Image (cartoon, rainbow, N blue to C red):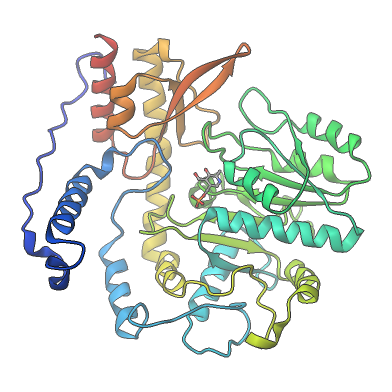
Length: 436
Ligand SMILES: Cc1ncc(COP(=O)(O)O)c(C=O)c1O
């Protein structure tokens, strides 16, 4: 156990000496000016050395394995990311433009579909631009299906702990909101949901449940939510942007599984969104969107009424026309056995280090009221320890109501790069700042 004064010292980070000749030759004397490119690159190289100190946001800052970069090179040699590929359209349909990576996209969706226990012969999805983009497709699909089935626009149900994109998306989709109360841990209160459904008995419900809320790491209980939705026209989209990445590799996989314990055909939810750059550490933003193919077909029949498929020879089923072809091909690497073995290790380590951080904070800084919403969470939130720590570790901060009074909190999201060494440096800094 680490006690006061016994946190290991963590050596200061030296600045990288950078040669100014490392940028493309035509940038050196370009309209941007040599100074700008030199400064920008030097700053990026400095930041690269500090990347493991990013503790406040759910991004895996580890560099992917050498295999990933070898795969990237192979793709480049085949022309992918060397000229204009485009994944426009439904990846499960033939495209009029052969310069796409639909086969990798399909395989990625099939593999992740298996991880989330979707029926093997009834899985559909695509690689989106981000978790937000996947949420957009889930909410749009729910809106379209519910309107098609009932003739009525649904109301959107979620909690104030949902990611802010959900609020934006319901605005974009022109849906009225029904804000559901939360339980003390930050998860959706199923009884309040039942009351709100009863108040809106004749209006379909588009429910967005979050498995791993952004600030507290709380879990909306999908099974209890489904219980309440049983006699109501509804669609349940699960936003598992962060937790959906790692839970399938832990003993808690059932939490994000499509399959119910009795293998009911209807499943536990209708669609799920996961970010690729969060747990997996994919180097740029992307998202998984997965649903059932039969549900997608029903959606597509409605979608085709508002979309003329003539131009691309089929109904795309996606909101955006052009879609990135490079990312699905690159992200395919994360379905390989070696990548998955790393994901299992990363997931275990994250949960272990989260437990360690919580224990240390409770022991040494009880005044900060550190909290972990549940044992599946990799997030520890606590009273804001002050500007210097917040700045050094890029901590996210938020006000949380305590006894109806807003108080300032911060959190650490223990991602795979957040090693014991990094945590020790953080705890040492915290100790120094608290004793000042
Ligand atoms: C619960 C949740 N949903 C959605 C998002 C947005 O995901 P993305 O950044 O991939 O758009 C986040 C981001 O932190 C999140 O925590």
